[in-house]
Amino acid sequence: MNAGDYRLRGELRNLVLLDELEGSSNVSQRDLANRLGLAVSLVNRQVRSLKENGYIQVVDQGVRPFAYRLTADGRRYRRRLSHEHYRSVLGSLRQVQERIRNRLRELEKRGVDQIVFYGAGEVMEVAYPLAKAIGMRVVGVVDDDPSKHGQTRGEAVIQSPAAIDDLAPDAIVITSFRHAAEIQSKIPPALRSSLLVFEV
Image 1 (tube, helix red, strand yellow):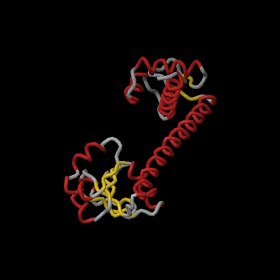
Image 2 (cartoon, rainbow, N blue to C red):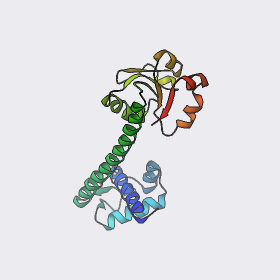
Image 3 (cartoon, rainbow, N blue to C red):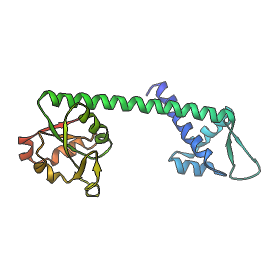
Image 4 (cartoon, helix red, strand yellow):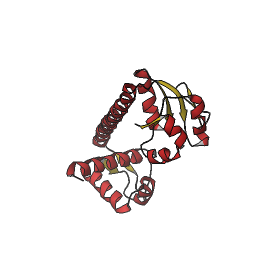
């Protein structure tokens, strides 16, 4: 990890900590650490740094736990961190969109028209409008999680993977980065031999 990565991680922790302090009254550093899933020593260092930089102040030193307040500089710093974090997330989303768009175009070049998405999570939420934008027909969305069955995504109702045969797609598009290998292993050999199985 390079120095830039450490700086970004520290600034993201500062943003989360400032958000937490903005919404809290009197709070101990141990409680902050528990809420944020961080070590108490790390929260102590971050709070001390924020105080030294004039971003937060203790309202009443005689009351424990302390009540922290953001200063005017602290509110400006928090806004700047929020904007930077938003730009970073947006940049990552654009990279994911471009990757998925390129993969779907590969399918289109192979003559695939009708697809089923396997995986009804965030990746599918990105892939669905991209597929429609390039003219592919999403004939269904399937997922292994029964609690998702019956919910609607776009114009499709999420179904069990057992419905793939009835949906008659040209290809199954696995719309999960984390569980792609697991999903691959669940696709029956008969389906695999008759349909193109593709990961985004």
